[in-house]
Amino acid sequence: MVIMRRTLGLLVLMAGLCVAPGMVAAQTAPTAKIEKVRELFLASQTETLKRGLHSWATIVVTMGFAGADPPPPGEEVFRILGEELDRALARELPTLADQVAAVYADAFTEAEIDAILGSHESPAGQSMSAKMPAVREETNRLGKAWADSLMKGLIESVFQRFREKGYVQQ
Image (tube, rainbow, N blue to C red; front, top):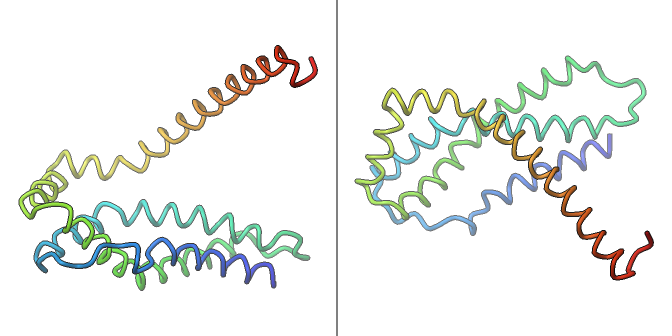
């Protein structure tokens, strides 16, 4: 249980660091501009953030139960995790949305934000939003397989050169 609390404490600390006040731009943009970006962020990122946090929290919680005797029932653990994650997101996501909106509002003009928001609300934008989680998952899988293959070949070629130089044994 101590390991579980430490692990969850680390999860909370790391999540807090991602949105630390010093890491975002000052809110200098007009309120209407901020609200437009906030709307776009919440519409386009809520499900992606939820999935990512759920995956991350699942790993952390699973590690926290390593060696538990008896282990807790898996279905109950994941039900509780989902409920608590939903509560935490409902409570905390608006803060992140405000901070992200300030950064975007400082970086883009209101006309640019209107164009981005308009494209997001279009049929193509809605289709993209609906399909992006699956597209991201597949492209992440492809990217990992590509990186694994690249690294394997890279390691082989590096060690071949080390062998040629006599740095490592054949």
